[in-house]
Image (cartoon, rainbow, N blue to C red; front, side, top):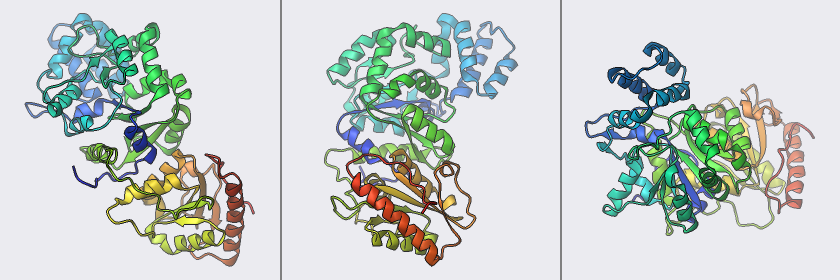
Length: 455
């Protein structure tokens, strides 16, 4: 594998740590299946397309839909997928597996490139809401035909036994296409399974309360993600740490990402989306590379120190003069600084060093300018700092639009990128107070946001 990766987002160093330590569970959604192709070269359907094809299958095979096809299509168009799914599950009855098998070309699907990377990574287990066997197929390809144990709700006790013995396995949370009677398609049936099966619920509670879970292959409006995270909200509250989800950067608004983190302990790792979601593959490649036992992880770009508070200053390259001025002011008050002007260590991908710098910093200053609000990198950096509960110090230049998720923090206002003496004085005074606060509380793991608008 390459010694560097091409993932263009920021990967939290603590995610790499839990994978290397064997404490991470992968949860695969429909997005990875949609990247796969059949032997005929066709992509597998997404949720909406799958439901439409199921409706058509019912019509062709004489299954009473209980409604006009067009009415069901209208509900699908509104993305109320689980309503139609539950109706189809009840209408199809024992023919559900046959319907899905024919639509999904059971036995004629090739694992995607993303699937093939999964076996290279040290997961505790792989959970999936998909019904297909693509994950097992990927393991078979890299192991010469040897498959990991595969479980569903019918043998959840065996999965729990594997978990206790630290034996790697795959678990189908919504059933297995190859096992008749296990498929759970609708919301009501999944709720019934979750609450009527103590062993099934205990299994999921153990996973989410004991391990870090990484969700890959889910979209912002994915019914699987919403259904699972909503029902397991109480489990998230008791978990040992936050979990992670890989999403395109337009899947959730900043407020939604904030609520996911606060309410469900889900830290969003975002990427710029293209038509084929190529960055999903690059993300998995990066995880596989960085989590190898012999991989050299980025060292802290900050100067070694035990007591000096550290500040990360984020902003656009076009504001570099202002950023350097702010770094000078921070250094005058005693801070060790890191900015976009810092030289990178040879051979270290920029995004890895930035991730490490944010993880190691005590506070995060973000320059809000007309240029920075358009920068995906600044957005990535702010997201990582927020998710890591860093002190956020916003500084607004002129009339630059203030991002929604910063408005409730309080920001320092300057007239232009040319700091006046009075503005510099006020910034220094605020930084001095912050420096003293961090120094006294250096052993604490989190701090409150500081309002720089106050002297």
